[in-house]
Image (tube, rainbow, N blue to C red; front, side, top):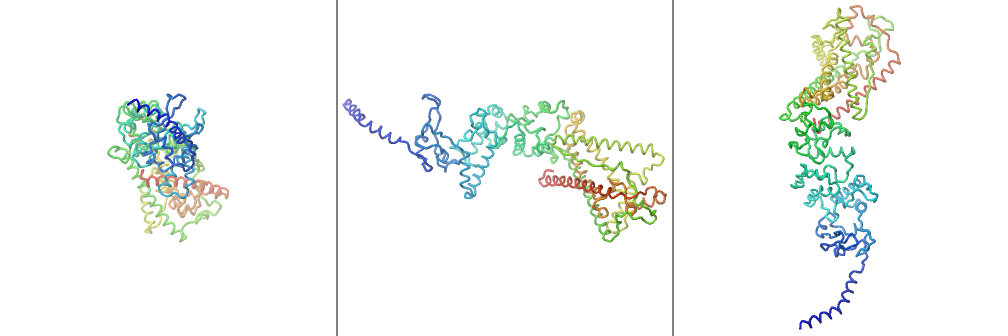
Length: 631
């Protein structure tokens, strides 16, 4: 009985097999593919789990897995796209061996963007704009460049980093999972870097604990605008990227010389990864950190040979706003701010009141004209100007511009020149007081620059005159504001000079001072320089050129002489003293020539323009820092 049944099945199989084969051949008949071909056709093969094809000739060769998870694809960013929109080279199903089966992500997204230009609004339009922008970044990146193997392929194509069938939409859990997998993806090519990263504080947090806040490769190198890490653009981007997570540390870093030069676009100073390493960074508190106590000397020596103990305790992230952690920096910063506010509040008020009072007198015709007229009691000849300064004091000014390395040389060169001028002048003053004029010099006399009680009386009288409560004081050879201008550089020389030497020779200074002094030196060096620049180009310019009786320019600093009428008005006490002593005639000289006046004005206006430009740049930078709360 069983044998009969088996025989029946065998006979049926013999007759039915051709029909089955025919049916199969009909199903497998190539189907043309066009732009509307349904994905169902594709899932007939690619939707079967385990679907793959051999990469070699034999059946046991390495397989290429071609299974596509339909659910994941539909939930991805490409879920509303047909397969044939990306796989444009497919012309038949099943595919012909000669079909390239390649996907051009760039062309696809660019075509979609052009097609939808002006039609897509809101979220979809913004997403597509971002994708096209990333394409432009990618094409210029190191990944988009042709591989050196001569294959014509890029160093890394889109599919090397993105699985086109599971591109997760932004804001989804799948997108976070993809981001955390970035080190694994990058590690397919960059094995050495990923091995270091796995043991770093970033890698442990992201790979071991799944911390989505931990930095992965794209957070530092960017995702598409990737350039060679050995070139300046990448170094600058990576350094700035550190600030996206370590904001406070970055803000304190950019206040140091290292950071200031880096912000200007130069990379020859220390950057975050120079001290903390690029991929194997550890917590600062870890003994394995390159900046830990035992490793700091080795790290610093990479740039600074022969570092000293004090140098090693420099605070690279000292915060002048944090009194609890950095009291010395806080005190130095607040002292300099009070000094700035006090000086400018006093002298700007003084200038404003002076301007107001002289403006009234100018309208009333009480100010002398710059005509060099002979004043009553003065000899009526051509000598209508009085000699004020010898030619040796009428110096020209130079402005040097250049990049950070050049600026450093110029800055230090200017410091040496200024120091030489200062000490030569000091030597000359000592010689004049103690040798040449020892018999006639009076410490508190009218030609002495040492402040005295008369200066206080003149200041009080000047304030009364500002408000119309008294007459203008009769000044002698030096006024109180000129004495301030003279002595201010002595303070500035000490503050800027001493702090500058500390920063110029940190290894030597570090033998004798603790590290926080370097931070304080940085603060006061910059703040005092700011004070000097703003004071000179605002208060000093006003005193010399911008008050109504001088505006727009006083050329006396170039020609060394001034009209007698103006001299009598400006220095009434000195004028009367010289007349009484019979010394007036000896000081009278001829007026400057028209040629001298012309070139003096050209030079003067040029220097004033430079000064006002520097003042604008300085105040603009200060204002921006103040606006962003970075002071």
